[in-house]
Length: 419
Image (cartoon, rainbow, N blue to C red; front, side, top):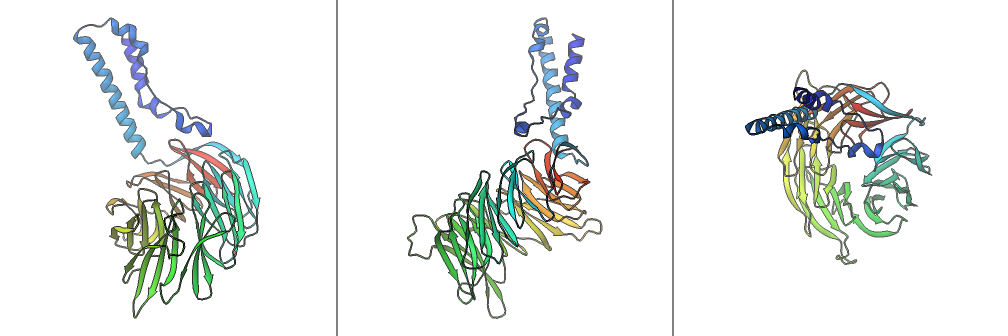
């Protein structure tokens, strides 16, 4: 019996739980199940009787609970400072290649075309074009590539090209929905047109703004179903710069001869250079001093308004969180990381000192990197990773699996496990 109990203790040791063998297949990362079977001890438990049996079972349950509690705390709150390369795939990319995570793979794009690769850096398809200054927007597994201040538009998804077309006016900004419908901000002399187009370039609807009337558009956002368009406009008055957040409804219930305007909210002495849809039912506008969230409906309304103290350097979000990297007054920490819930309540605040060039939310984590360093935080403000990387980072993203990430460089891709 002593040998059996000793064997059980070994099975429950944190070391065994912590050093679970890694699954190498990309698709199997999230399929691993960890369990402890009690079948091996069926014969021994039959030999126990009365109160002794209850004590043994209680001791076993306590050990299991303690083991999993310690494992949970260590795995969720431990700061990792290194990594192990679990897979490496070489592929020379030309200088200037950019990377975006798309579905379970990645797109590599530049001025001469776009390529989609899977998790092993194997090319799945490629499309050629010529764009001097390519810009992108992603919705689900659909990617929009457009030429800023140019006329060319390319739309792709994980299966390949969905369509391409030329516009008759220069493109200032573009956003895309999951179905490939794009909203383009087009420059027309002194005015700006916001045009909704299908994947073949067919015009579906248009909103025209003038500086004198509506104001100057600063940013646009499109819901994932292409039904709602959100526009941030700046209006210059006598000594003030005010803003208007406008919502346009392009659903089938809106008649084609209407302006499509569903709601318009004015703000005095406040500018919103960035707007986005967090979900199809919640949108947000970000200013240099905070943010406002909106609830969607037939007439979108303000949901929460938050003012932050300090200089905002970067903003990021996912479907449940809005966050900022801000300048810090601390002599030892250069930055503050602050996150908020969509109802406007502050969720967490922490600080860090290492510089960064990119920040984003991916799979519920906050990822930051510069050319040779990576950091990860949880939305709750817990630092998960802080480590140097021995190659120049092009893109740092989360991939399926616990503590699994991918790093793309001009020399290929590496999948890593942080430790």
